[in-house]
Amino acid sequence: MRFIFKTDYAQDVNLAKHGGHVFWYSALMLLLLAAPWIFAEYWLAQLTLVLIYSIAGLGLMLLAGFTGLFSMGHAAFLGVGAYTHTVLTNMGVPFPFALACAASLSAAVGLLVGLPALRVKGIYLGIATLSFGFIVEEVLARWESVTGGNAGVHIKKPDIFGWVLSSGEQFYFLCLVITVVGTLGILNLLRSPTGRAFVAIRDSEISAQSMGIHLAYYKTLSFAISAAFAGVAGALYAHNLQFISPDQFNILQSIDLLLMIVIGGVGSVHGAFLGAIFLITMPQAIAMVKDYLPATLGQAPGLQGLVYGLVLIAFVLFEPMGLYGRWLKIRTYLQMFPFYRKGMFKRQKSFQKSDRLK
Image (cartoon, rainbow, N blue to C red; front, side, top):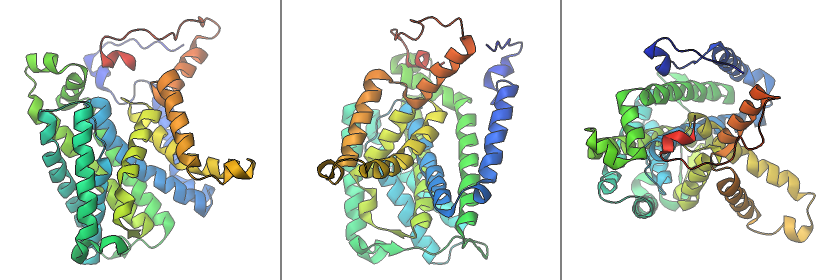
């Protein structure tokens, strides 16, 4: 088992806690860089989709996992970013400027949606964001002169100052760069005073306010940053499909995003990536298993929703910390073997949410 002796306060905010982190994350980065030469075209496309959903998951994780604000309309921010980027790209605006505008407009909309968070919380905030999601979906469907209505709209290939990304490999590297930059941004934000204020609000609003944290400012800021990440993910999502329509950003998409962070592990950056992998691979796994099921069950409508529901119930009941929490337990077991105690991971009462992930 690894023991880390800290001799400097700066060690508490280091991104890499020890040499093992540097080695394994470097190996993962090398694997991702070599992915176009290792994986087939189909699996590379699935990996690209994982990266796109990871960006959206990072934003929602910041909002729900680190600030404690519940959102059931996050797909609306995804749609705002996707349509803003599509309209600007089709007008000939270069990719970086269009992406920045998509993120900015999504952040501005998130700022407006964050205002109800100042007065309501919990399920009531979820209902408010859900209502906003329905409003955005209706606006996208009715504003036909800009969005194309229910018929949808096509988008051109990404154009970076004359360099058109026409292949799947080029677009994959673009998504990889944006994902790495976004992840580093979230990690640095969380170890800053702003990130610590978010966590304090999540743990106890009364305690945070007594320490001088401005609740209204940080809640709306969390909504804005989360929406900006969703806007970036929406822009990449539009390029990935090359076609978008309002029904792609409905309540089901919002539920998928929530399912992603809950199963991945609420309150951890790793959980956003693990949840994205689950969200993309689960339909493939269900499609493979269908061939071995009886025809009445395999062809039944709603099978995927049933499986998702059962998996979510299982995680909530038996593993509330998600896939990342399960990995922490497995890692600790392997580190302490053979001195592992049977009741070591028995669930105990946590007085603060920060105590749940160590």
